[in-house]
Amino acid sequence: MGETGSAVVQYTTVAGDHQHELEVKRSRFITYLRRTTTEAEARDFIAELRRRHFDARHHCSAFLLGPDRMVQRSSDDGEPSGTAGLPMLEALAKREMPSGQCDVSDITAVIVRYFGGVLLGAGGLVRAYSQSVSGAMDSADLLVRKRLAVFAIDAPHAEAGRWDNELRQDGTTILGTDYGPSSATLRVAVPDGPTAATDFAERLATLTAGAGTAVAQGTEWTDIAVAGQR
Image (tube, rainbow, N blue to C red; front, side, top):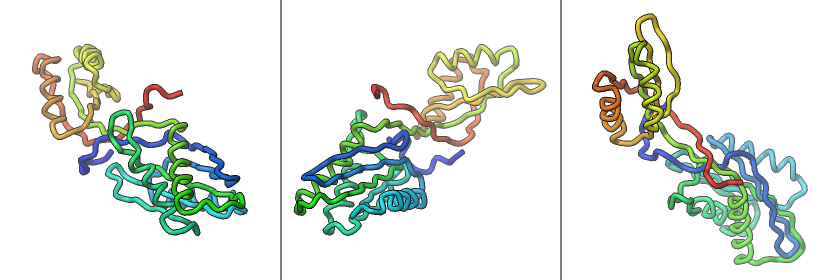
């Protein structure tokens, strides 16, 4: 379970491995996306694709990591400087989600290019690499990572079931209930933010007629599928 730390409380990432192919003047641009949470995972993914496509001319890459996207890297891998890795990175970093936010992170994109014999020029390469990543993101399954504030609520056995039910109806996520000899402990989660603790304390007081007290347990991240996907 993490600590609050960053001001970022949600971001978007890819749900699983995804592949997309674009052909431009006989050159094949095969885009691979993978959810990665560390730089080591990102570089292992790039190395994996180098081995798989050992006969390709270029293996260009870009990745963003962390809720606040503090780690951002890209590589042109032999393409003219600035024509591959950076357009790929910008296609990820500037992608606007349905929420209106540009918040894609924890994702690595690798484009394997098989040269088709026709030079595309700098502008053509920029468009091809950018469009390849955008096309892959268009067809990939995405999810939202939300940071939740976790609380423990001590409840009398006689009230635990009712409090559980009323909290669920109020939209609170119930993580579980532990029953002890004299009372039960409900573990609940609500969207994190600067006023999460005070807001939840007020709601809990209303639902339990002032009998329930929430004890902060820290934060944890959870995955939520993006609505409207295939």
